[in-house]
Amino acid sequence: MKKFFSLFMLLFFFFSCGKKENEANGNKLENSALTNQTDLFEFKIPDTISLGKHIGRISRYKRNKKPNCDYLLSVIVSNQYEDLKVKTDTFSNGTLKPFFGINGFKTGTQEIELIIEEQILEPFEKDKDSFLGITKLYHQYDLRITVIDKDFISKTEKELLTELKNQ
Image 1 (cartoon, one colour):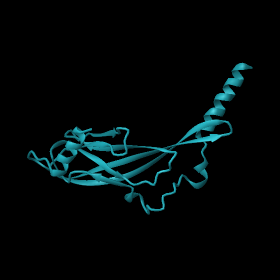
Image 2 (cartoon, helix red, strand yellow):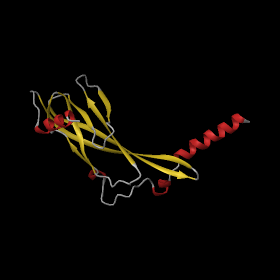
Image 3 (tube, helix red, strand yellow):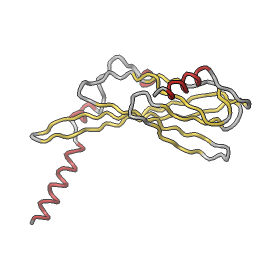
Image 4 (cartoon, helix red, strand yellow):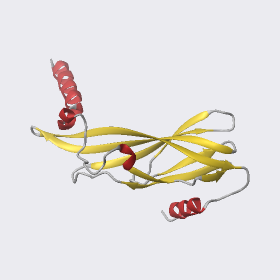
């Protein structure tokens, strides 16, 4: 009987954690200032890089934030390497302006796919228990950069390296 009660409580807890008040409104957050998702982030990315590894950053996150919520951002980058393998890397540093890596694998114009994972953590109470609701939203961006053969560091990349060094 004790095992049955424990199993029942475990199942109750499992199903309770997934329920959230905003399910009724389709996970739409009140953010009337933003008309589309392309207005949600600003990026600081060099438009010209040399062959090899470089950095970019989310420079601005423009969500109208709720006061009792926490927000986390991760950048998922699909980088192609010399052996034509695509490697997906996830970058997050616990801030709303994470750095991320981009790789110049061949000279010429190169497409890079970024997916921003936005996690919204909202505490709420149900009866006498407190729960944490987690909403995950994904935003996809395709970037076009130019890769050159010689050693080159753009003004944007110099600024990013200085920012990274000062953190």
